[in-house]
Length: 508
Image (cartoon, rainbow, N blue to C red):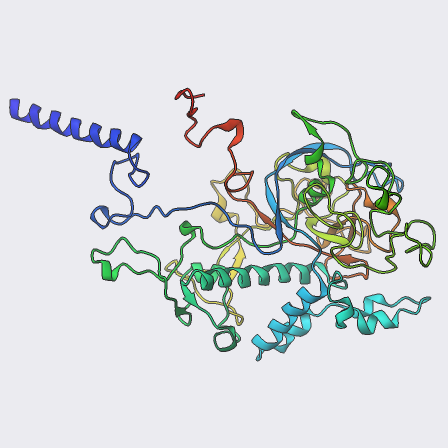
């Protein structure tokens, strides 16, 4: 009996010692079990060093927060579609400028040289240059030159519909992630010899282990599940490694409006000191209180008056933008974003509804969710890829979600629509009962062809996702994962992640 008690006591003290060691010991020891991370002895569970999400090419961080979404200007059209409501968005990244002709030409060139057996992919991605035509205007030079000529390479791409913009964002995700893997030396990628038809890099397909054509690099990751050091080489990156970036995508309407308001420069304690009509601290579109050389200049590219697209020749105080101007024109807002107010209007992710602001969730508001899941075979294995090398997805079914409370159906676009409740199904029919349907997407901001009214961030318009215009472009966004204030910055309230004050050594 004494022997058993002694053994039990010894075991208890051993466990306590491991827990104590894990609480104040090195970070590579589990606080749950006291066993070492990254140790072949304990099974090789990996806890890699992670410094935080890197900033992707072309992006700037927009620190999230709460704001008043909706009207900041009179509802001149009496649409009653932008009632004010306080919502919160998570921190995210956004393109510093609109996607340019050069960037989009890079995209369509890649499609042309890669999908040799599927030329329709390239054709489908081309912008509609004919969007410049007007029955009572001579715009043929822009039809001919705007997209292709180097004079316009740094101008925003137009004539791109919502579907094309979304495909561009997905393509950008794949190219950035394959570049990161090549840069880190994990894979050796040569687009000239390695990319063709279905042998192209797709992030989700790669994470699912569906590739066998990618060459190994010179700097593999460590696989601690192997006993011998010579075997501890891993050329496959997992989600847990945190090396690849989340997806590029179009911003939600809430994200776009939040970034355009740029209230970060007007916060005193926890209050926004003034409600701005535009993204700057003034009620006019001309600079008044800056340096003498800038005083009187117009802040954006929009129609100043009826028939006045750019001002008189030689006028130093005009915007000079008869059509879109270069993407780095004018002045950035407080987040460092250019042309959020003018130049070209911009697509967002959202499906349009007149009462969106009343129906939205208060956190990360968005309408347009269609939930999907991977296509698997009867054994739960990924069944196949499509002809372009992408994983196949299908809509989730209500049978799969019997025990769910947060959603049942795949398509939640019409959730809370009055027609949905009254008739049991959506009755929005484009051109029959309304121009609004489940393909109508929100776009925001003013353009070179709009009056300044549309420069107010709360204004909103919509267009069918398959249509395009000569005054409509886009920029990409990406979610910020982890700390909302970026890498290498202090945590909120000056607390480390443990919640212990470094000076007093006490928990706060």
